[in-house]
Structure formats: structure tokens, C-alpha cells
Image (cartoon, rainbow, N blue to C red; front, side, top):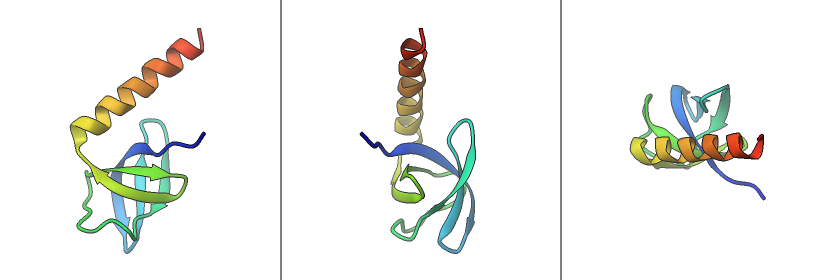
Length: 74
């Protein structure tokens, strides 16, 4: 199963954004997302930005993902 994950936008160069997922930086295509700015959170799947999301929602999802992975590794 593939899921889109929340990432924070660190830099934008035309339609490519450098994003941070809490562990790593990577580049994603943000062609489909209008009005994006540094500091916004988006859902990204592989190298494609899908939509902008609220910071609170993004942090909640990241926290749940982290808790799940801790349980999975025990």
C-alpha cells in the first residue's frame, strides 16, 4: 500500500520544492499546488506534491506515523 505523507516545504524553485519529512530532505514536483510558500505543509507521494494541508493536521499525522513505527519495531 502506498500513502501520501506530510512534508514541510523548505525551498521552492519554480515547480520543484525541497521538502523535509522529519528525517530527510527531498525534491518533489509541486506543479499541481497553487499558492505554495516556504513553511507550508503538503501531502507528497514519491516525488509528487498532491495538496496543501494545515500544519496542525500534518503534525498530527506525523506523530501517528511515528507512534505506529515505534510499535511495529517492538
